[in-house]
Length: 265
Length: 265
Image (tube, rainbow over the protein chains, first blue to last red):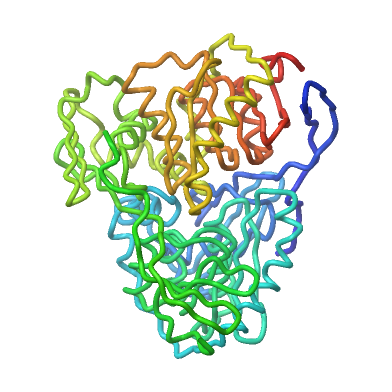
């Protein structure tokens, strides 16, 4: 763990403005391919921000159902120079062709915002948890989440996801990919065997159907974003019993379903 | 073609603000699963905006190398109610398991902003084209592109992509998924057998490595966005000979590589 590399690097940029140009060094967001070797075989390559790779890799594998218990992880190491993560598991995991045959859908579905098979939802169950949270507590947590995002918002191009309970933000991740940010939350929950029944997921970006399904897999009963949900995400939220709130900015937000978990309305 | 359904639908929303709630009907962006049946077999499901499905489906298949000529398409029809597209081709296309074995990478890579195999780039070649375009022309086209995006920007959550030459915007698509928007441009180029050597691609969102690779497949020598590129996207742009400009807003933009195509600097 730890931020071994930076979110940004410096590059030469030509700035054009009204006929004038200036050459300077400017920050540009880093994006790296991170190859995952599982029990000696190449398994996948994630494109991501070059920080805290463990939560991402483990969150991706746990979300896919490839590993189901942290104790299954026999060995984990990251060769930063090669950008390769090596993972050994105690129990056999599906071979690539089995994974492909069984999980092509899931692979593309979980990963891609626009391509999946419908059986991607096979292993998704309604969330369990009797959380109720006051509206003003949600807003206060959102303000803290926003404040921590400022460094990324101003330099452009990083998405944020956080997991919170009623009292505090428990974990928070940033990544060039919004799916990655939520996969990292999954990794944190999995590695820490966290009971998520009383938690809320905060997002900086839009709530698409896939972000909703990832939240259902994490098990959080409330999902709130600064941005808008899609109609399909709200349909799934009703199906999986997740409270969805959007446009959480300043003094208010919109609630799209399962509003009974939010008190003080 | 044609916008058979709308980008938005009306849903009941509870608006919370400073202790007060209001229930009203509000616009929420549509997202649908669109299943693609290729020669009678289920091939993939795209999650997308429910408009102009043909460019998206064909663009996706052409970008994957599944179909290589518009004349290969024997039959195409869309069952809107079932949200299923049926495509018959004259020539055999890879069966699912072949596709999986060969193109798992490509599938996830093209689709997912965060998961691919490195051989995803196998069929990407440097762009060909001796386009030079004045900086002020680029800005004027960007203003037109932005103006047309206003309806989507204000209601939230739709990405835009356009293809232009020096004189005009040739094609423009909006979609809840930014990858889809660019896949639609690919479909337009493919279906119209367009020579893209003199064209520019405009994007509303960030230029990730995958958006760069899609642009290389489309064959446009210039890619410009209102938002930022990633470092990896700039690396690929240098490799494939694509001019990358970002932060195109108001009176200026930043150029990250291959600036010789932009005149008037």
